[in-house]
Amino acid sequence: MSDPPDTAPQRPSASAAPQLRRGWTTGACATAATRAALMAFWGEGRPDRVRITLPGGERPDFEISHFATGSDWAEAGVVKDAGDDPDVTHGASIHARVCASDGGVCFRAGEGVGTVTLPGLPIAPGEPAINPVPRRMMTQTVEEMAARLGQAPDILVEISVPGGCEIAKRTWNPRLGIEGGLSILGTTGIVRPFSCAAWIASIHRGIDVARETGLDHVAGCTGATSEKAVQALYDLPDHAMLDMGDFAGGMLKYLARHPVPRVTVGGGIGKMTKLAQGARDLHSKRSQVSFTHLAETLGRSELKDMNTALQAYEIAGKDMADWVADQSCAAVRNMLPETIRCDTVVIDRQGTILARAAR
Image 1 (cartoon, helix red, strand yellow):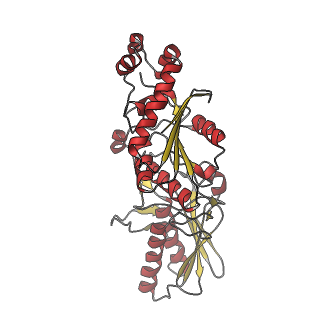
Image 2: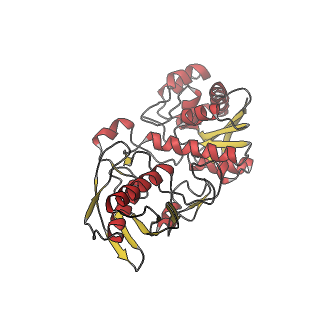
Image 3: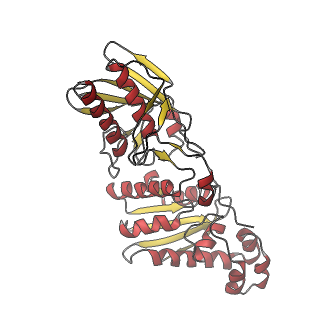
């Protein structure tokens, strides 16, 4: 039996992804909505479906679910289909409103789309939270259609997501300094179910923001309970808390290349035992506690018959907690340059700190 996380959501293993249905990013949906809105704005009518070209060359069709027009603007919408990925924006309506600009293609955040307020992200503070690849896709759409229809490519694109402010509360946006709504994201246009890469990319952006805002101490935790305990212990601001989850290795590798003076890693005793035993991916499908090793290390033969690390802790007590803290800290130390101070915090299910170590 594997050891459960401290209230962190379980994610299916990466090996399951090929059997699952993929979906489309908010950036792809915004591009499709922009194409449909431009067709109405430039007199080509109101299409039921549009086709766009993704960065990799694929050309999917999107159903248009919404249209509205005014004297000098047109708006279209696409309902996001994230496939089988548990994406919080699945089912959200992505709207694009187009009108003439003073020159070139420019972007504005409408209802439910956030604004960047902190440095370290790919978009500068003060700009709509529409990432570079979606901007490029929409710009190329405007320029291609303008050339074909003999129009000037001077268009203001306003992206909105009705209800996006509430949805954004369930994302990492507030922690990254994106205020007022969601980000329009995507590098390929495709959502691949349960993508580990997407999670790790979000950790990287959190580190970028921490560095750019001058933080000297960040923390990555395995779940909500350990995060709350560590944040309270060190009185850290929200943007110092990195959403590490199971990806200790992904976080620490990036920190090794993009250092912050001090790093804390916190978690429940189960996942921290895995880290202490050398695991870098702490997901229950990809790493397990070795109870034989634990029994030999602590000199407690009865531990080899345990089913969970918490069960082992109930027998071995403080000796085990101290060992886990020390050895997980050694594992963190081995992945970081000596210039970075590091420490670990081990908690129980209630968020009580069982042990700490520093190196």
